[in-house]
Image (cartoon, rainbow, N blue to C red; front, side, top):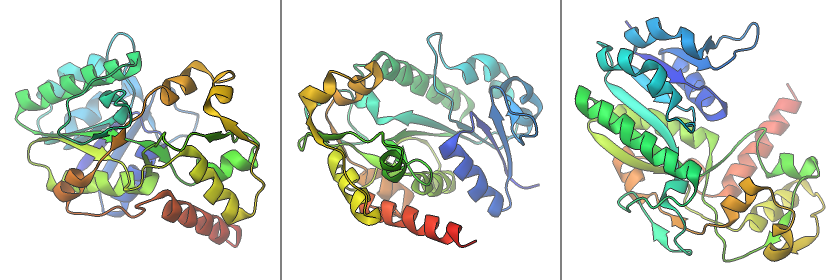
Length: 284
């Protein structure tokens, strides 16, 4: 029997994991709260038989106000799932909170300032507790800003939605979708205990630098440069919550633990690969 991964909340990143593992001969069952007609994904509430058969579990659904929906709905089944040997949870680097630009790594205590980050910390702890009760491996994977094909600075520029904010001291950590997939597989292959892993590339960078590189690559005009103070006036509450915190996230311990380097150690390599995939796709 091949290993069986169940993904609770299969979105953009987890779909890349699914595709990668299927090429390796895995059985993968993905879920979505309300799958579209004809979708291969199952409804979130219809996956109990698969969970009882699962060897690995990946949670990509965010927690709600009442707690983690996956744990609340399927916790009893997961306490008894006979073949389960690994739990992976996609969290966020937001759990480190605002560090005024200081560096954090996998050993840094969490200090969430945002309500949604506080909910993430509780979910992290709950999944770790379940894994420890079961005596199985668990990886908490804290993701930086996710980008990749169809979700990059190219798309934002072309849609006319880019805002070039001049804040050179405000560094954001990012991770390419394919690095998430490859690192998730590496986590499964090296799992033995409960670990904290930071999925961020090696080059935390200002937002403007990414748009400048994307515009250079596709010879696209840049929007006017704005100060953070000016841009703040029209930001949504969600956008303000991102810009309100500054930290530099390190992933050296994660790379050591997984015995791998990032495919795209900076946004430069990541954007170049996305552009190349677009060119190849246009000739298919």
